[in-house]
Length: 382
Image (cartoon, rainbow, N blue to C red; front, side, top):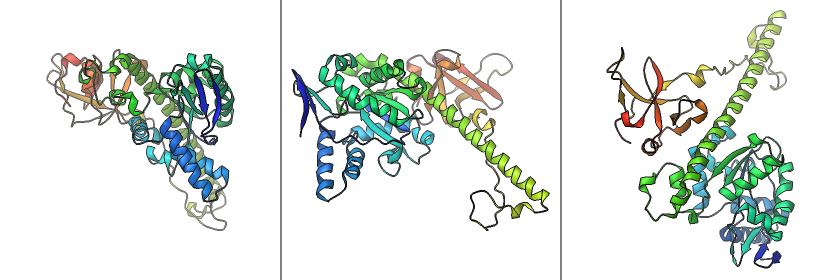
């Protein structure tokens, strides 16, 4: 392994991570490649070089194999991405495909793209510490910042931990990234993070954590990061829905134009040749897929939930309300009635951790619109 730079306590070790996936839609940003990634990268590079592959191909393969690689890190990353249904927004089949069939949609990188060590240990400091270190700051400026221009303005960024989030926030402040490009942060997915991934994913509540668990010191940050990421994910989804709706409108207009033109020529709709079809082929005009607003907003009620609330007053007294299943596949919990404060919890995830923290739950019944019910009035469990 080759040392690129060192000064006092800080050392930078070369890792063959130069490949930039220029068409990537999703950018994952850590602090710096760790020892596992370093080992995986060198092993993969050595194997590929010995087989006679071109260096460009070697770099691409190394990034795919070693980028956030490891027995726990990548599975945790996939769990985090699945929780927020990121694959659907990227237009791919499954989150795990980002390291397989859909690897072109992902670019993995770090604030310090080469392996950084301080006093012989992997660097895990703050972004302020990065900027105060001449070794690390130069790597950030020389090897990370230039890639932002290459990746383009449509890419979305996810920080892994507070240091990466502070670095990306700095990039937004410096207008190197658009504010809408920064989705927010996940907890770092490495095993050194303890139970923070399970807490972030609502698999554990505060009550489940041992009093001496160091994750307790990060709970406020994790809660804030979850809420902010969920809101950014929702805004991203609205952009994608708007884009799909616009594309559908164009498809409908083109189809209508084709039928109208055919009628003007005295030709039936089954004889219209569609744009892009094989020359000389005859095709019927496809029925366009129309994205109705009702598909997004029309409420549905998940009747199988174990949580319930019985209305005690008014004309609906005795009516049983259940957790409201929104059309995007989520429940909604919130501290307030304002939509900006809504937190979307994917169907299948536990609601009890949220209720224990004092969040109200949106509940409804057939014929009754959803309302927020405070947790002290809700019975049942999951």
